[in-house]
Image (cartoon, rainbow, N blue to C red; front, side, top):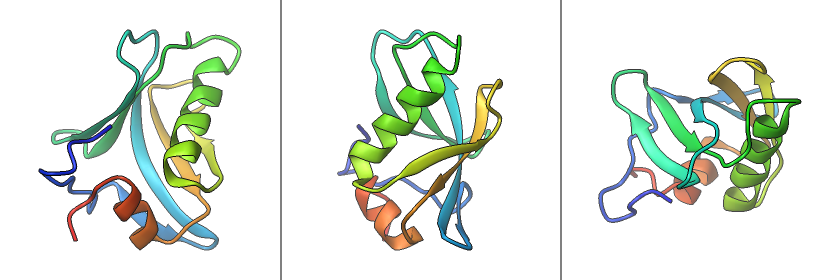
Length: 105
């Protein structure tokens, strides 16, 4: 979970899409400390750590489950299925996503 007291700058990784929002993320599979870790300042991607290995789509499923439960809406990996850098589609407007992730107002 991000530190909500600091705020998270999502301006470079979150954008509107036809049916909600899209976000650039970077995934760390096989992590011992899963969760959303903030935004990587160099890659401009939300860092998501998952316990699942990157085999058989299990890490992608955990990413979708983690972000969906955090935001309360459907989240789907739409690009980068076999890569660490991915794009997810979120069935919610940017404002809701930013609020759910503790983004800067």
